Image (cartoon, rainbow, N blue to C red; front, side, top):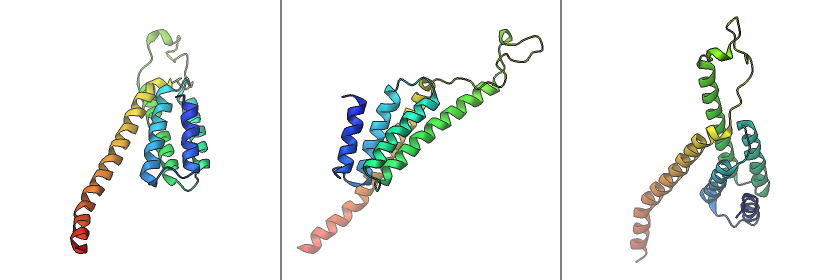
Length: 159
């Protein structure tokens, strides 16, 4: 199924309130964002961020009270910005090769921002997103484990 169809499907489900709970909305949004980041054809990180924002706006407009959707979109944008900043720091910190310098030793591209392809950051952003999904699963499992003894006490109290 194409990404646009998946976005439309999730928007419809959010509008019709067929996605239950914040965790469900967060998971579905994170899964969609993971697909978006891994399949995007945008050539630079800022263009990728713009695409993530556009999809995020559609999802948020579908269900404005599902705050988890907006939080996941913001988190994905944060992951991309972090990777962009790390890559920019690495580029600034490295000394330019000698063939890129002119007579005075200044780089030919001094002051120009490096064009950082989104593929360079998408793997890191996907890894961070995967970690966030794992964290949500651990928290859900922890909550279920914490509630299990309480459910057992309620059952015994009713008999």
